[in-house]
Length: 545
Image (cartoon, rainbow, N blue to C red):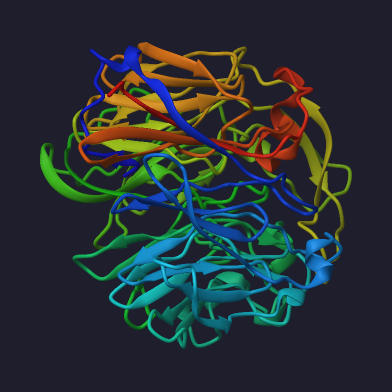
């Protein structure tokens, strides 16, 4: 949810927040996108994955270090010379007496959380093959689900989500994000399977941590774009469903890895992805958004539904699906986008804006506006029944097809000719959406976007923006109640925790230039830059004792 029930810090006392402690990390090395991570805290101990494949445990009240563990990586990775090996540092998972992590060289491992001692490790994939573990692992019923990021160039094995035994590291199952010839959805790759056989289907990465439906035993997650991106090169017309399972949400049986349901949100000619956070909530539905892209006409008003919600793609469209079977319920836009025209309310079939279609014609250009959110997560609050989306109106792009060859073995097959202005003047556009109705509770039109979000039982929303400001915001009204200035752009979500009855708020600031973080590079023309890369800093705030 991105929600904590902790409620010691409230709108009435948040102005008393003070810095409790901080911790400086070593600067990120070559090939690093920084610390795209939220720490985790259990029993007074904070566990952190650093940018350079180091892991540490700290006293959560003072920051004093308890232990540190460093992975021994091949020199070609640490030097930044290895292809497609990026240090992303996206977190760890604590399960009973195991701290589970993965490293850039394709290894999965477990540490003893008390000492940092290595318990076991196993090789998941060859890092030279264009695949690497990405988002933080998650454990359910003894199975570790590991998200992967796969390259857009040729690789010997299609992309996948894999599960491993938490006690031994043994692989339990592997599910490929492209259907095998035995799967009925294989035909969505065109009439001639030899045009794009399974081995040639690239990217389609499930690179964010899955949500877990504990009642049904499901891993629910999103899948990114395919490469190349033009549907006609695979012999399809781009109509729904197209080249499954790219651009989709899927649900897998956590025990077996079998596919339970899928829902495709778009055909992806634009690197729109569909990988961002999925949030599982229960809520009554009477959807009536004024700018709906589609509403299921079979919804009984006021009927309680078990939902998977969120803004899944870069276009920041908000979706609600039934998480039991993937039934489409409704969708509505947030920030300005021009790639999706609408959805069939009953089937959930997407309707692509014809003006945004890039055909295999090197002279055809299309203006694409869909750069409206990135990796930093949104949040849900049960206090307001609202989803908070870190949307922004990023630059538009004039794009065209780069190659007409269906056998292209590298890249996405598209190129950006030039940037284009967004018709919306303000850049930042965080928004609170009532999940039941789809209507806007509040929206802030700002120059600087807000990024990762945290909601608390005290009625507050915590988030930082690209001007280095860190805010506490009223969940009901959007009023900014408190702010402080960090040493850099904090793009991931804050966390909150309690030790001995005292609530803390923690946030990591990358402390580098905006361009050093891959998902804020698009904003450089409209946000002041120039800060030096001085490494990352963890800031922890609390009320006075």
